[in-house]
View 1 (tube, rainbow, N blue to C red):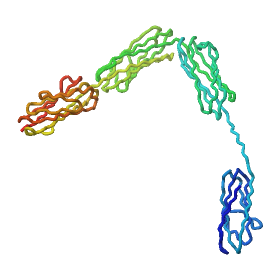
View 2 (cartoon, one colour; view 1 turned 180 degrees about the horizontal axis):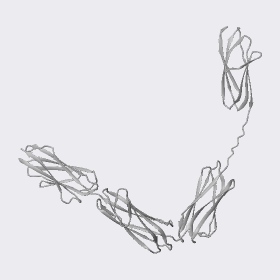
View 3 (spheres, helix red, strand yellow; view 1 turned 120 degrees about the horizontal axis):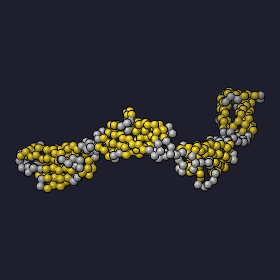
View 4 (cartoon, rainbow, N blue to C red; view 1 turned 90 degrees about the vertical axis):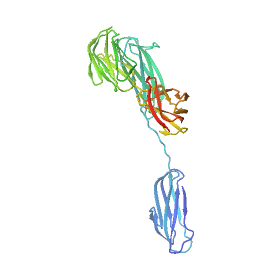
Length: 442
């Protein structure tokens, strides 16, 4: 313990003065007691914190414990009742302590196994084993033992597989992938045991049905259809297995943006068409038809699935791109409606695709009469001038809601009502769209 005391060097008779005491623990201690012996000629006014006043004009503070490096501040207010040196004596006692800590923890192992619920003989059977330590300390020397059941076969030919996972920390998870081959019909349950040198063993299992209940579902249709038209799809359902499939339910789900035009033999409810029939024999094949339409462009997938009382399920889908239509609009104008011979004039052309589909090879041609002579052509594409005809290079692609602008600078040459014609064409618009602008040359 280190004790430091400070007080004024001088005070006047009858005045109060403060004595500050600083106590610091150099090690962990308990039962700390501080004694201050006050000299004759002083009167205790107060202490902070309050100390116990004892015999012989003494003052005592007690603390249960102090940690290493901890400090405490005490203050004593005294009144000087005589002249001369006033000396206060301090005495500190404490008991050093030592601590011995022990962490009590326990590893808790949990395992799970997942895989296919149903396979056919000869199919690969993939299982995933998950081992997790849910405890508060590491599990050491963790070993997973997989007991291969009759009906499954591992490539190693062993009936017991062993996986050493080593150490698994708290909240850590380790996974194992195991692949078998289905060799015998029936329900097989693959069980695993998990052990560790410092944890209780645990186990889990997963069961798979090996059977020849098979169903095949195929859907075909057009890859691209214009919006507003009808797309016809063919659904082919077959049983390539060796078991009769009962209570078959075939459900076609039309995409949200499409609607069903017809589905012969089906019960149509909203965007769903449902066919039901009692059984599908081995080798038997059935076909179904459904027609859809939409006014929304985009790529939409039509999905169909089949279910039955044997839970031999399948699904198929076919995607169709519903193609919209481009719609070009031309805005043509001049900078001056009336000019004199020799004056310049500018013409602007703006082409906008207002449709829902991109257009390609968009071409702009401007025809000038003899009254106006084109001088320069520029804008979204390079322009060329030949005998009063301005031709701009084709725009390869003009997307929906996209616009391109062009400009032609010209000069008035002859008097008259000059009619300038702007034309736009594309791969989708073979017959050019024409807009005329009148400029009066005085």
